Length: 299
Image (tube, rainbow, N blue to C red):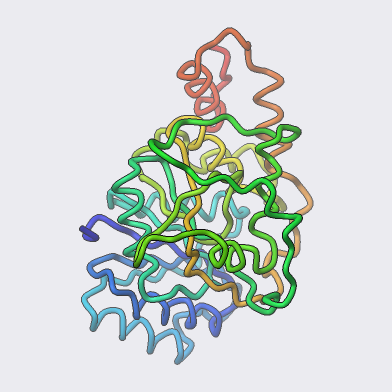
């Protein structure tokens, strides 16, 4: 069932890339999902570009609701994602970057996986296919297939699990998919640190973990907001990556050039330092969310 899915796309100043991303969505075998685009382009809205208008029409003709927002003030990546999350009402939300093209079966595969695994998120790491000849087996050592139920997991820098971030460099997802045994037409789940660009969340779990409300604790010039949200969700409900990826990165330069503040350091490390290690996970979660929303976090 896909009627409960909202695809959330933040964008800024990249109408051609956005049109490619929308084209991938228009070609999905899954049906019935809604597409929400929040455009922070400073001048001409992306929706005014002919290629974006064409793909929005194609999606609507295919039975998808498409909502395009423009003019929301720029307050950083986390706030942009929170704005999109606030517009959602589906059971699931797929945060999709504006420079990722999805193979036709990707959304259906992600929905099947999260429905079966019943975890907090599943993600498809975007592949840089210009790196297909750059094979990096030394970056695959942390790969670990998930067998059985997905368990909550606490991941932090300095631990062995953190090394999983290397799995998503260059074309590693494509090379890994060639070297594992995949069910015919199916998927394989594996352990991750975090995944950028294409992540499907159980919306209730993401909201319960605070979403991206921590944007209030960050300057606009930050990076790593996805890491913070995913580490919280993983600790509460688990999260995995999927092979095959089915997500191709367009390999454009980043549109966010002012990103000097590390959200992981400002949020995760600060919360860990302040947390009483004797408190249980639920109390920790409540205090973190209270702090995200501007409370003191002391009670």
